[in-house]
Length: 115
Image (cartoon, rainbow, N blue to C red):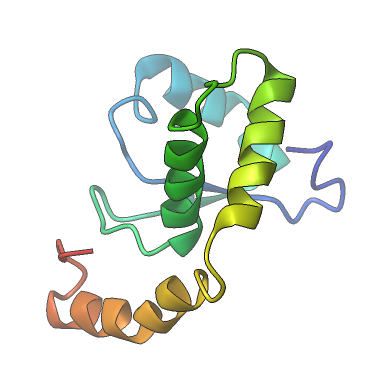
């Protein structure tokens, strides 16, 4: 964290997923707590990050290619090619979904949503 956020403004988002709350992870967070701010997120909260949807679509497209990637460079090439093959306006759909996502999150009072 101190390498990436040398200004001391780094934040670690802890969502209490099982592997994030393990004994090893908890001990590491405690030992290095002075290196960053710890942002607590509600357990099992809905994911509102559209970047993950886009990442999943890219990975899915890369895996469907006629020659699946075998090396890191193959993966990079497949992801770049898949990105350029997305239809025009592809990113507009997830961006336009944000008001609906937030409205759904507010209705559920932070609980599970269909997103």
